[in-house]
Length: 197
Picture 1 (cartoon, rainbow, N blue to C red):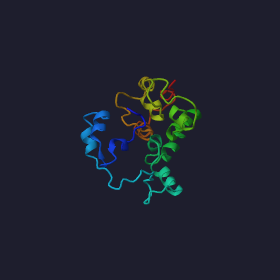
Picture 2 (tube, one colour; picture 1 turned 60 degrees about the vertical axis):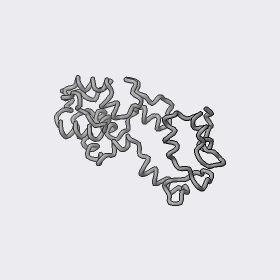
Picture 3 (cartoon, rainbow, N blue to C red; picture 1 turned 90 degrees about the vertical axis):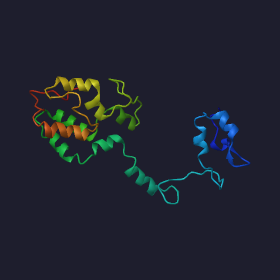
Picture 4 (cartoon, rainbow, N blue to C red; picture 1 turned 180 degrees about the horizontal axis):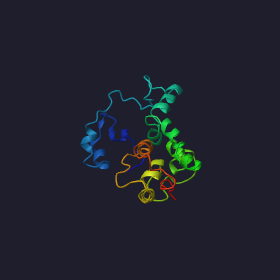
């Protein structure tokens, strides 16, 4: 099969219908009925580029800005920006822990941790996978709550954890669980939960 083959190559240019011979030569027999069910344009105009976010199909900077603000938020941003992280951020600084521990917790809440997803997003040359477990992408949530070495560290801490402790892939939800449902777990003298070597 020619890798540069186009849909128009599967259409008989005289009858303007699907070319049965070409379909049988190049398409899996199970897919032919699906292709036949697709209507071919009666206008036979050439394809053009169309921007789906404006009524007339024309690209504008304004529509691109709208797409960037409303549709292109990454999963990581959606996780972090759930209801409002303001209270969690403030609570991070009220913990009875060294300032650098509070700072690390604040970074986790705001998504400012040097995980591979963030490094790649900032055009750093590195692989996107998790170096500890090989997961396809290392996000903040994965590094702190899902990665097997992180789960092992959680199980060794004084924090009661087990399968399903962090069932949601969300920094906000998991930190809220730790702060508000388990208020007394982050005590420097009895717990080392965030030292995830």
